[in-house]
Length: 336
Image (cartoon, rainbow, N blue to C red; front, side, top):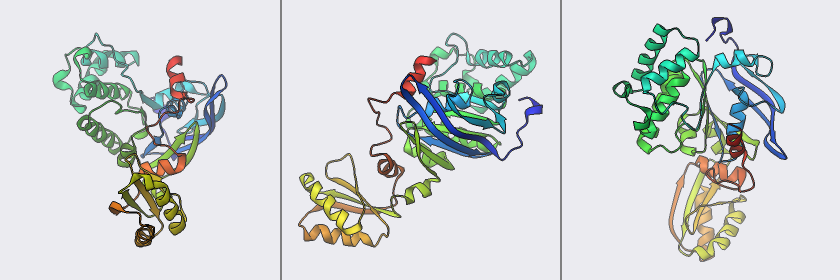
């Protein structure tokens, strides 16, 4: 990073009214975003929500059609070259050269960024060690597993030691063990002073990593807050029910509406209902109401609400669902 562009502002990202259109499609529609220095900020949404499009505008890889944004106080539109010195970007697909080794890839990225030969070699060795790839340094990328490729891609984005890292769905397609390793890597980056803006469609990932979360759906920001703040929007607790007869779900929903005054969330399993509770003690009232209507249940537990329930309550669908009429991120892939 250029020493003259060292960040001094409180906000790593400040964006207001971001808009991006593809023909008649408004992929990003008036999104505001503020990311504080030193935090992991999660942008949560399903495929096609506009997450990647927004990230690419902030990284200067796509022009904005509306709004303005600053990275550490530097205007993205007016000074894109300065912004690029402040940001490292890791996309959904590895950008490394398949025919080169891991060590050669990192050395090449360093040279392309203007690092001298000796420093590029030293940086490559350091990054291979930090990401557990030293033993695989002389293997061609075509021999790498998916997890190794993603770690190498993240390593490549750190060659210029940027203070802000954009991670676009960094664990997509990885097995649970490798996802856990990537989570630890991201936590280490923050501990070393980096700020991370993370897009994901995985609710558990946002819950595990993000200090604050913005929920994006169909190009709009529909909610923002910490995980606990978002969960509080659907009640302090959730009564998770399983009906003996799934055909009675409609009757059970009517009971819940009457007793607690809120709309329950139907779960994917047959007869599954999650009831938001303003007070955990109201669970007994719901169970009594069901019994009075002779609606039998097979299980009932009271738990804190999940981000999945939050997303369902905010958008009416799950975070992993795609809308056939809405292909924001797909449009971006066509632009790349």
